Image 1: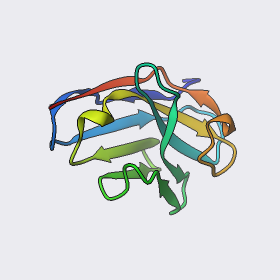
Image 2: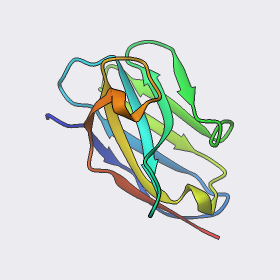
Image 3: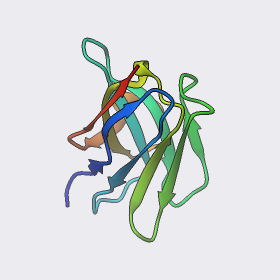
Image 4: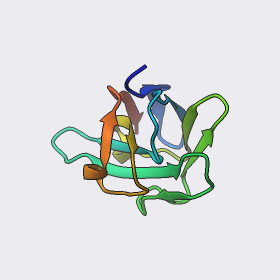
Length: 120
């Protein structure tokens, strides 16, 4: 496949959990990130992981609640989201980059996104 593909979104109550999955593309890349975009807002960084490495970075807004991980053998990246809040409602995107970065501009290949809705 030429683009990453996200799955696992859905509707969950506040305080609940979801795990998003990203099937990465066949390209060579350095890191995989998750971003999100709420209605009327800019797309923002959530987390990133260095592919086949151990480095991870998460945004302050989700630190302690969200965890990013990779399964190198199966070419998957996961975003475990716990203690979800209504403000986490957004479309979540998986993207690939040639550098380790939290900047949206550094990510070249994007998936179509998966909707996460957190009800209060």
